[in-house]
Image (cartoon, rainbow, N blue to C red; front, side):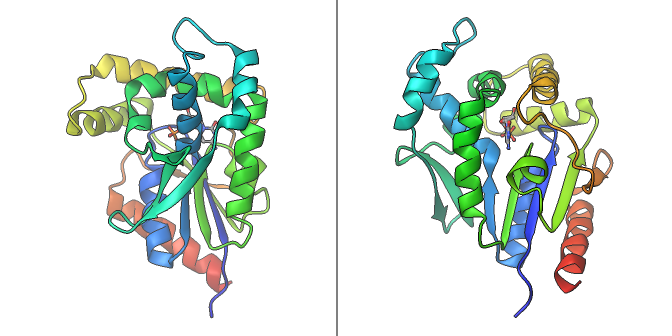
Amino acid sequence: MSKKITIAIDGYSSTGKSTVAKQLAAELGYVYVDTGAMYRAVTLYLMRKMLVSDTHFDEEAILRHLPFINISFVFNEEVGYGEVHLNNENVEKEIRLMEVSQQVSKVAAVPDVRKMLVKIQQEIGKNKAVVMDGRDIGTVVFPDADLKLFMTASTEKRAERRYDELKGRGDEVKYEDVLANVKERDYLDTTREDSPLVKAEDAIEIDNSDMNLEEQFEKVLKLAKDKIEE
Ligand code: DC
C-alpha cells in the first residue's frame, strides 16, 4: 500500500484552491476538507442570530454562542465530498452567498473561533490521507504537512472567476462589488493578528492566472505523486 500524506493548500480567496483540492482528493482517494466552509458556516450562524452584520459585531455575544455551534462534514456521494453542516443542517449552498462572504473575514479574525475550528481540522486530519484547503493549513493547522501548496492569481482574474461563478448560479451581483470584496478579504486575511494568510516557508507557490484547470491539476497531481513515492 502506498504512503498516505497530508496535503495543505493555502492561498488567497478565489484562486481555485477548492477546485484543485477536490480533484486531488478524488484522484488519490483522500478526504477533502474545505476549511473556508467552516468559517462561513460559523458566520452564517452568527448572522442568523443578528450578532454580525455590516453595522454590528458583538464579540462578547459571539464568544457566548460558540458552544452552541456544531460544524461537521457529511459525505455526499453525488458530489463526491463532504458537505458542511451547521447543527446538522446542510448549509453548503447558503454559505456561498455574497452576504456571508462580506462578513466572514471579520469572524475568521476572532481567535476563539479559530481555536475551535483548528481543533476540528486537526482531528479530521490526524490519520493523514487528507487534502485540506484554507489560509493557515500549512502554517498553523498542519505545520508538518508533507506537501504544502500556496495558490495565487491576479486580483482581477480572481474577481472575474468569482463573478462568473456567482452569475452562473443566478446570483444578482455586480463585477465591481465582487472585485471590492476580493480586495477587502485579501486585506483582512493578510493583516489580521491571529494566523494571517502567509506563505509557509516550505510551501510551493503556484500562480494560476494563466493556467487552465487541466494544467493546474496535472502540475499539482505530479507534485503529490512525487511526494507519495519519495
Ligand atoms: O476559502 P473561502 O473564501 O471560502 O474562505 C472564507 C473566509 O474564511 C476567508 O475570507 C478567510 C477565512 N478562512 C480562514 O481565515 N482560515 C481558513 N483556514 C479558511 C478560511
